[in-house]
Figure 1: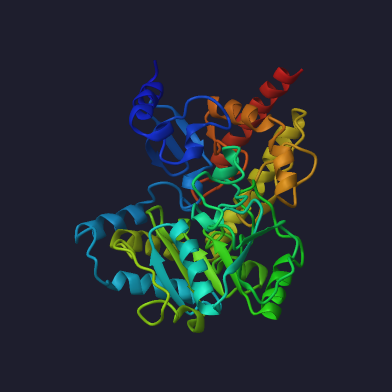
Figure 2: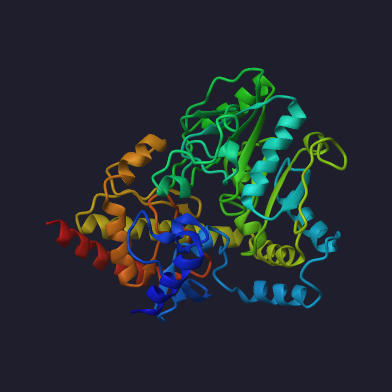
Length: 423
């Protein structure tokens, strides 16, 4: 028995399903998950000593690559002064200033401990600021595991074959309206907020069609609702100023995670002052957290954002373009029908004839059974994608030309092996 298998046997005795987040269980691809011992740059190393070129990168925060020296140095220095205080720190102020400086239209920000906390808090704030109850979200967009936002969620929910979640009451989602992605819904005076992933990165990767985000902005203004961009994945990855910088559309509230914490548990939400001032202690919307603004997370986030300048984003996009084009050629060359949509440095992979534009289309492609076959063929040869067809690929600054070339060579061999199995 391998060490990975032995660890999984131990894990299932003390952890539900053996994992602390469902997609890690390999339920939608089959097999036993690998347990990571350590990571460095573009690589992770499992419990059996195998090295993988990693395109999971913890689902996004590893934008510099794993264990970047500057981030490690910042975290070690911060830890030497204490790991948590329950009191304000200068580090919180500095990172908040960095976020506000980068995002046009964002004037105030509050840090939390996860992306789920960020979206939950932003929705509560939107309801408190508008005095309205209803929210609109889009099928296939995943905004964390808060009750009101789990309806028809993508990513981890979809990878488990679920449309919702046991334990979420009808009352919890009674004020949640689910609309198809890439179609502007009709809004009225009962809607507090429209929450959207500006690039849907939890149903594979689905780009906004021209006019969609602009249409949401106009519809919210007409109805007096707030537009919320969930940039937990896209924030500081699409561009220095996130989706607003990339698409030229400014929401009322933003949610962040992943990159803003440099690999440590963190989230953030922010917006205009006239909305944010509804938060306690200034207003009547309560939100708090003992570990919010944790000094280690603030240090890691600052070190990461300091390295993400315009040149870094240009290099990331060049890498993602080269990877997407090369993977498409490798798969197609072996006779595997595929499309690899890309927005900035984010890319997805669908084993079908055309890129989907909404969740129904994404589900149809994900249900054809090709992704698990290619996933395992790649993993056996040393390339790790996310163990689920509804996730994006996350190339980092550590994925240089040599690493991408190695990936493409492995992909060609893996695709040929899958094609031979299908014959």
